[in-house]
Amino acid sequence: YIRWGATINRNFRSFDERNAEGAARFVTTWVKQQAKEMAALKLYEPSPAERFLMRDIIELWHHWLKSDKLVRREAALYSAVTFFTGARSIEVGSLHIEDLYFSQDGNALVCPVRESKTNVFKNIPERLTLVFTPGCPIDFKGLFFEIRSSRTKGRLFQACKNRRTLCYHYGRGAMELGWSRTPSGHSGRTTAITMGVAVGIPREELEIMFRWVSGSEMY
Image (tube, rainbow, N blue to C red):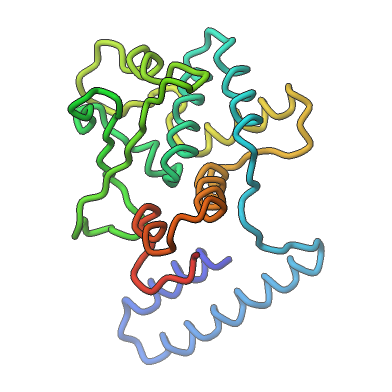
């Protein structure tokens, strides 16, 4: 309703007729009334995305990687980037192969962000850094090369192409593993933020890492 109301109001404002302002007020009232009626049918309370212990999410990645299906192998890498960098899933889905490069020592994949929620006009450069650590139970560097294959440009993720597809496989994977909770597109970011707070990373550094707008109360 919020989206519909904003769209209709925007169209009303594009006209100069005298009654446009009254019509816009009517739509705003209608949107609120419809939302109230819908809310009365079922309790809905906004809450942060579900957070997960790393050992559990690693179990899900291993489960996916047992499959030969490209979509599941892509989902594992897609999900890992969100958990290890705290990126928004929509940003990870828009990563392009031609933008990516390895650090000088080859132990990290640097991912410039094309679509940013808080930096739409790209006033500053934004980078996600996926560090390949020796103790990681999954070879994500090898998985990256497998998924990229011989391609030199275009979106990195072709089968698990966006947040909606990732969330579908989160749901399927959670069901197959018998989990009572299901990750969502923001679970990686929320988990990374929580882990950062738990180990005592200063607030200022977290604000930089998670790329919140200046003065944000997200912390």
